[in-house]
Image 1 (spheres, rainbow, N blue to C red):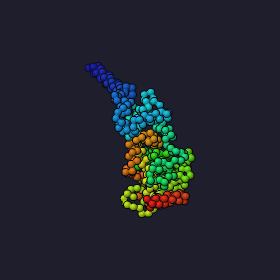
Image 2 (cartoon, rainbow, N blue to C red):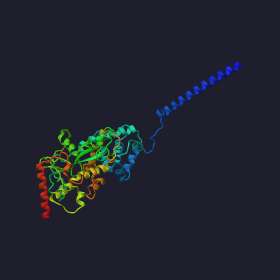
Image 3 (cartoon, rainbow, N blue to C red):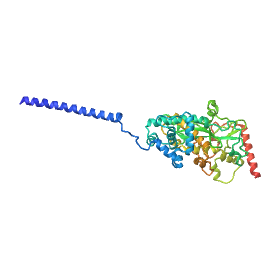
Image 4 (cartoon, one colour):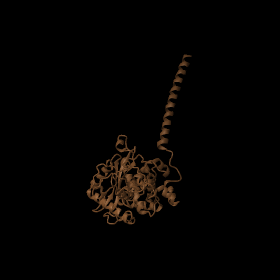
Length: 406
């Protein structure tokens, strides 16, 4: 009996040990199976029959509206852009052609969508999407050196916008462009946010830009924190030689608003008077001659605001920036401005440009340096040249004389 009992206990112990071994083996097998499934035999994810390449070709061969809506430009402009970017060192990869790369980039900047949405639409991995996005971005930065600059570097010719509009000719015949600042959303670390959050209440980068009368950017200085004042950015742009700011030749000038200094070559409005166009629309007539000048100055200078309007309307990424490195966010600003100029110079007609060229289109002043009245307290380190004050007075008197005689 004792022998049987001992044998039973021995057998039971062996069975328990066998059970333990089996359980350990089962767990190990499960872990190995999970590892193999996850890392060795992964189930394919991007398996749609409509590949990214096929989708792009469908768009390019379909209704023209689809191309404009998806890529923010017409078909022939898209093909021309691809050709230009190839000339600026963009190359096809083993598994992706230039057209698909550019389309992917344009969907990101045109619609502000993230990496995962692009993975699904183009049927590529996140790493592939990111790599090719940056390749196109780099090519667009090279493109910017060709397209973000004055059409006429010596500013010899008066632009047709001035010549063909009796509101501006001949009074503003020496005006070569307009300068203003704008803000786009940005993503920065929590420790950096205080420098980037202005009165808008969320992080932005402050951008100074110059435009010509054709609504093309001729200079951009991006990347400043949202709390930086426009005058500070302006001073940096003019004082830093390697930024290649297009300084006005003698006798020429840019139009600026009250937030900027007015040294020689820059004309601003009269302060302590009405200036922005909506203020004049709310009442009839002018209270004095200075307001007459301000009205015409504002109506011409708002070309820069309309240019910003086209740019922001065309590229939704500027309204809600994804979580790129800050340097990449700055590069996106410059790259989209280059594409903006490319479209303007290449397209006979563009829906966005037509909309913002229409003076009936109301431009919303959404930048936090704006205010209703031009009080002295608005300006920050705003120096004024007596020569430019005299030039402004002369233009004002010419406008008044013309109005009295006509």
